[in-house]
Amino acid sequence: MDGLVGLLKVRVVRGINLAYRDARGSDPYVVLRLGKKKLKTSVKKRSVNPIWHEELTLTVSDPNQTLRLEVFDKDTFSRDDPMGDAEIDVAPLMEAVNMKPEEMKNGAIIRSVRPSTRNCLADESHVCWRNGRFVQDMILRLKNVESGEIQLQLQWVNIPALK
Image 1 (cartoon, rainbow, N blue to C red):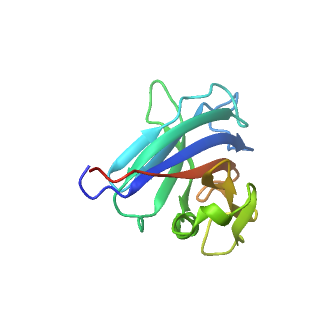
Image 2 (image 1 turned 90 degrees about the vertical axis):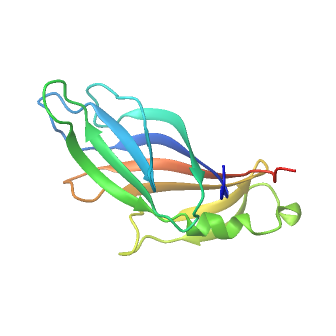
């Protein structure tokens, strides 16, 4: 736990219009990478619009690292097929974490991030103070693939100092 800054909870909500990799669709799953850490969602059978609602928690020791998301089609007898990827900039969420939440109203928008050539956002994303936590909802447009988006929610969890 040396150098641990906090926890990043990533709720993988759903995939939208993912690419077909098999005759009947795809069997997608999501891989998240942060530094040397790697977590996966479950595989959703025969779906190009899968619903996961799975929460993956990553320990963060360097808040400047980029979170990488990859989508794959699970194959039984061959290597899993890539279905796109995206980078997630966690800096807007990290900037909000340093604010004083005592004066904020529930649902307050702290910062808005617009889609640009420097990010993978499909739509405007908001960092909010919600139910006592900083959260950011986003839809990412996948790169290196013909179609597909992934809906996520990021949530930061501070770790109280060990005494």
